[in-house]
Image 1 (cartoon, one colour):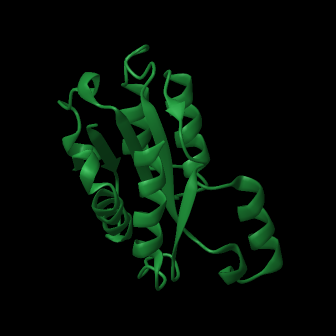
Image 2 (image 1 turned 60 degrees about the horizontal axis):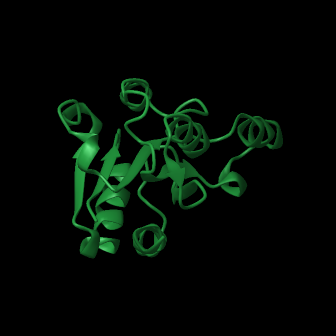
Image 3 (image 1 turned 120 degrees about the vertical axis):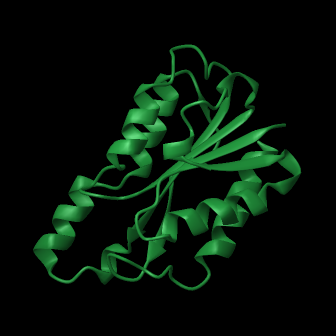
Length: 157
């Protein structure tokens, strides 16, 4: 099984999660690629595609959205897919109103998963969020371990 993890990262936290995911599915021959370098990647030989982004304005980054939109229809038919994001934990957000806005607006993993599914991918895990301290991080303790464990489930799916 060949796995590809495509990610974007603004402060390095999402990159750390992507690398932890690759370590968690090492036996699946995982390759990790920053989205800005993913243009020439052939998805035809991929058995598992995992895409991740920091949550910015309730959404994935523009670079991840462009990557997803550029996937030709049918290329992901019968390909296992999964999505993740990095985010601030809801209960860490100060201000009840802002917390409610964030809870309503959502996070990046769900729109990523939906676009992968619409491109024909088979979602093998629910979209997952990994937590950072504040807007820029660092990652909360244990998140890299949790990411590796989450990814192992995708590799066995």
